[in-house]
Structures are given as structure tokens and as C-alpha cells.
Length: 175
Image (tube, helix red, strand yellow):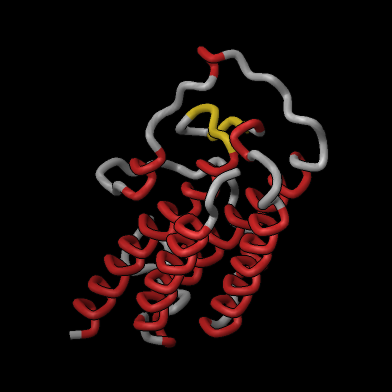
């Protein structure tokens, strides 16, 4: 089985950085988009929460069943590390649940609770080879579940950069 220590540490570290940037966004600007067509900090956090909730729920569900064999040619995918790159803007296929929008501390608490559930699912599968379980990613292709968990870390990095942009635009508008 895989040594989960480095993966768990990466998930903790990327979330720590994400939350640190989110906490810098002034409370009065939390739900205000910095420009037309951009997401507010609250919308970014809601999106990250939704993606992680969906992915973790799917992992918990899919690993209860025997893995489905996937032919080698259908296993190829775009590298997970590209998720963190913000050079190309992509539209999420998951519509934003506006019911998740709330104050900063409430949303970050909810996000932290979800990360705890994610880590619990990962820990519970310690004796399971997650490379045998695959699911299609909307942009990257077929990923095994270790790559899905790596994607969550890269997703945190991507959206921490987006939050930094929101913070910079917000500060620029305030001055």
C-alpha cells in the first residue's frame, strides 16, 4: 500500500495556505466580487468546499465496491499538477450553491470540517489500493483516487492564487 504521509501532509499544507490567504480578505469585501464577472472570496471558498465534498463523497462510495478494470489506453490523463496553473481560465461544470455563501469564519469552519472528512476517508482507505479505483475528471481524464486527492491539493493552490488576486484587486480599489 501507499505511504499516505506525504499526501496527507500536502493536503494539510495547501489548505493552511489557502485559509491564510482567505483570512486576509477584509470582512467587508468577503462577498463582493472585485470586478465584473469575477468570483468573490466567498464564492471561491464555496466552490472549493463543493468540489471537495463531491470528490470525498464519491471516494467513500466507490471504494465500498470492488474496483472496475479500466483499459490501459483509457487511463491516460493530463498531469494533476496543471490544476494549480492559472494560465488558462476554465469554467467549473459544478454550479455554485449560493446557499453555502456566508460569513468568512462560518465558511472557513465548514471548509475545515470538510477537509477533516477528506482526511478521514483517506485514512479509512489506508489498507485499500486506491490506484485500482478510477473516476473521470472533467478536464484531466481518468484519475485513480490517489491522483484525485492530489488534485484537491492542487485545487487549493489554484484557488489560493485566485484569492490572492481578489485580495490585490480589493486593496487596489480601497486605495
